[in-house]
Image (cartoon, rainbow, N blue to C red; front, side, top):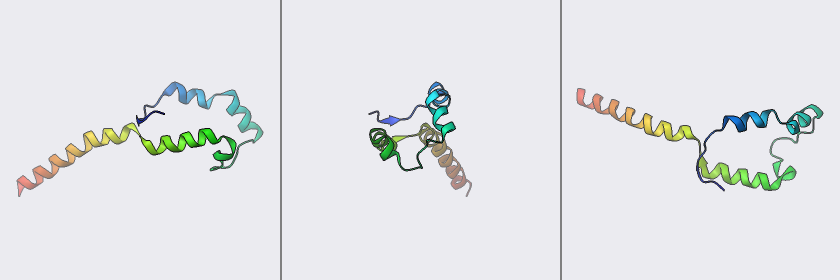
Length: 82
């Protein structure tokens, strides 16, 4: 299990969208409804639940490092003008 920041991978994204398994499943209509991952693949569902609770997207950190200092400097300039 990986903890920490999620690093998006373009190659994995393309591979997931163009796999033979996905094409067959979508064309034959063999998809399970949302939320039934525990029935189709319990191991993967458990992994995904833990992963989504313990990792953060890369944009959260980027916004924190760039956005917070900008807001603080704007507030500081506004206070100094008064």
